[in-house]
Length: 339
Image (cartoon, rainbow, N blue to C red; front, top):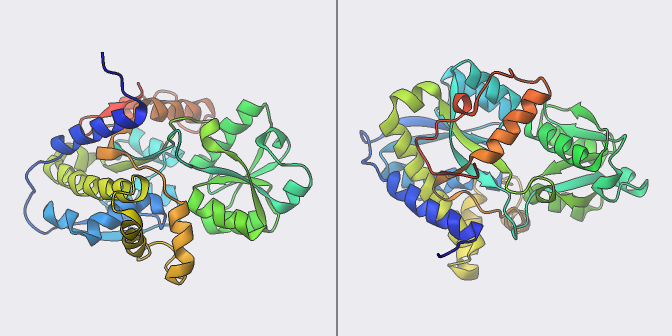
């Protein structure tokens, strides 16, 4: 019997999902809005726009940018945004419980052998002895909102270390960064394209890896309104078709380096249109490259990780204890794994 490692399995699932998603495009130039954060982990959407993959799928896509996950979930529920990529949050789960949204795929996962999210300490906390996650007891951990993915990660890390953390909601990623650099909070966790430059500045130190505590963590998901998932199947399949082509290009270029250094440079130019746009290209490039994590081929979804997140939110009393995975996830669109 042939055995496959996780990377090979993901590749096979991505190929299968790509075939499944190759549905005929709906009416040409159907206008939709896609929500995103200015993170490299959202590059699947950026590439699909820039290289015409959404257009090939019959969609005229407008990107709308947000600064945190929960406002994006609200925008999906209200119909202001049609599709989005974001982390699972308490707000997202509660909206699913109300019948407003559905997770339809996966976007970014922690993967063994690929540099992922980092656990950070402020310089003041580091100098005072916070040099590893084992020293988190009694410290303050930055989050955007209660019930955010940062809250989930911090709690799971603290539980593994037997530490008691206090959490400080700061609403926006930029505010968390400022608080960490100034020592107003002691610790945080974030994707590498943000973590590594912060550490390079000397004001922040990397003290661990999230993957050591949450292997296979489904960091972000693809989601839409429950109405789109149930009533707009052709449109939703078309979106996933275009998005998945963007994801495949990203992985091939940035992880597998199929196009060599020239391919990486071209991809960095594309991503720079959306990420670190305030910096000159030469200063933005190292951060964009540092942020390279494999995206989920074919938008395959780790339902075991999503279930773990749901269970944690329930255990903290942040969402109803009656919500099931089926309430949150429509598993009919992509391959699922981990369960």
